[in-house]
Image (tube, rainbow, N blue to C red; front, side, top):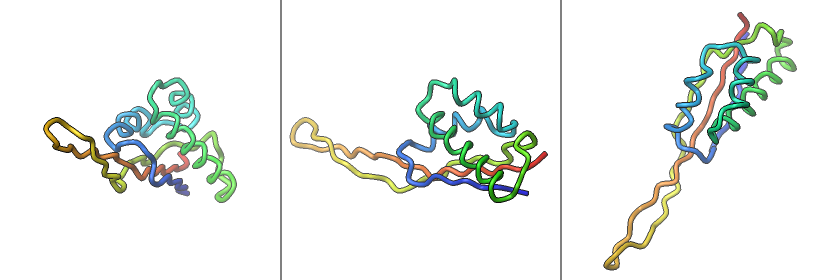
Length: 110
């Protein structure tokens, strides 16, 4: 029984969070939560909360056994850009693109 948890409009670029996602893809959820708890990246805290939410969804809605859950799929899609401008020399301006992400975690029982 698959269980899904999503976090949308997260203020981190998809490229940065995918590096953290690669560390926990395909492993058991208890080990993933433990790894994310010790990872120094900003995205690790966001992913840890999302995985814990997916675990709670599996427990509450599907009645799944937490000890058998593993991360089947985990991915980050690109969200909308916030476009800002920074003044530069000689009256010019440079665009700043503040990226957002849509995160998805899919859990399944082994």
